[in-house]
Length: 227
Figure 1 (tube, helix red, strand yellow):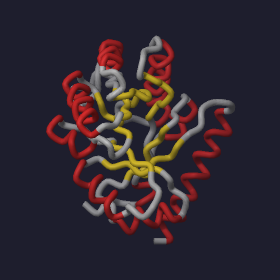
Figure 2 (tube, helix red, strand yellow):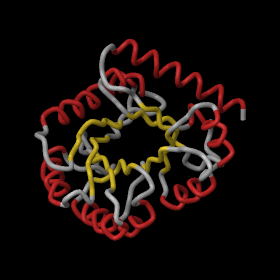
Figure 3 (cartoon, one colour):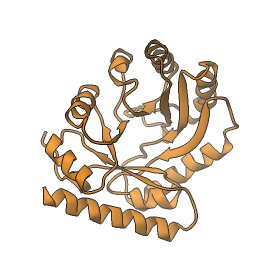
Figure 4 (tube, helix red, strand yellow):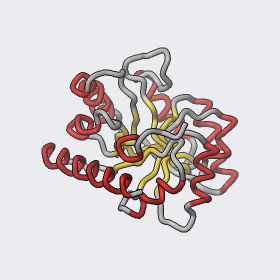
């Protein structure tokens, strides 16, 4: 598993260099995306200094958490979430992909049932791509109002986006647009919009330049997926 440790160090160095180029701004957290990666690879990355792990599937999130319960890990759910899988995910990490009223209601209901407050990000489909999830930018204020009305059962920590697939520099305007949207949103109860989850293996350095606080990197750390 030395390759994983070496890959992680290279990515950490690139994150640090991108932050230095950006200058003063928010801290950046590197999330290792472990979709379809073996537990042994994730354990190797954690041993080498990774602190945050992202999973795309509810069952895989639960299985990895159980297998790595002996380690301190901050978990992130970054895949599409259906209402019938909410029970598997609530209470297990930051959910990045909340994008509709029915999902907010389901998460809040489950959080109340388990006695906790679930932290989430709103996923925004800035380009209006039909094949991608995410709320339209104009719908974000009313979704935040709904979260505020849930009286603390669900707390919004920020915004997330997946820009159109393109070269890193051509994704820059989408990252800037998410930052600008965040800045325009007025304060609401239970909505602490401090996080911007944007940027992956191909473009995380550009995302950092535009204000990302959470970057999601998978194959550049773990190599090709097992499936």
